[in-house]
Image (cartoon, rainbow, N blue to C red; front, side, top):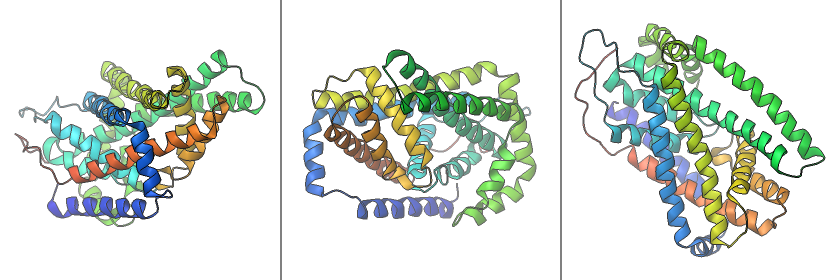
Length: 340
């Protein structure tokens, strides 16, 4: 990626971090006390997210097709480079309103010099679709498990049934998207973004035909590369389940008797509610409300929900800072530069 574009993404991330720090709705002394109470469990949570991002990277790599290079030697993509792009991409997504507003253009622009515009675009779009698909599948499975293993009644039963119906329909629509490809439509949408929209427009106009070919590559996942699709889904779904382990570790730090299954249900319900408020950076407020409702639904006290929300918020902020700083870190040069 050209230095000026990289600086735009870096500046965007720094501004978002500054805004989040200035609007953090908790006293910093109280914040520090909560971190101290978590103790070494907080370190374990930070390390856990190294593993989660590792699975995200494997999922993305499974979708990156480096074959059929027209007789040229296949470009080599360093794993650390992909790991960095994964972390920084999620940091930009989490820091910007609406999500997916910074991470996807960043990943495409970083990966294009390594594998070419078509493969960069198709892999990023396919992975973004996979990430969302696994979220939806996670909510679907969690709603089914909740109805089977928990004593539910009233509006909660209706909510779970509605979640199952809506998520099932969304999974079906995503499978249609994989069969037909949506890279071209997505890039047209990204061109309308503020600040970086004009830069993306220039990139899109220059490589318009490449996005049509990218859609064909995405469609090939469903037909010709079924195993790559399955591997990517498995890695990504496993990363969703590991987010439940984070809640479990926090519960252990306060000696709660919540089980791992309880923790998975909490994060599933919380992530569902927070994603309904996708227009807010870091889902400010929505995530805390989700934790409060989910934990209350499992007959735990509100103080537990507040503690879990604070620890997750701090972890999120620290990884956003790390991801934004990684934008300026170089992980070596590609062996082959491809221009498509």
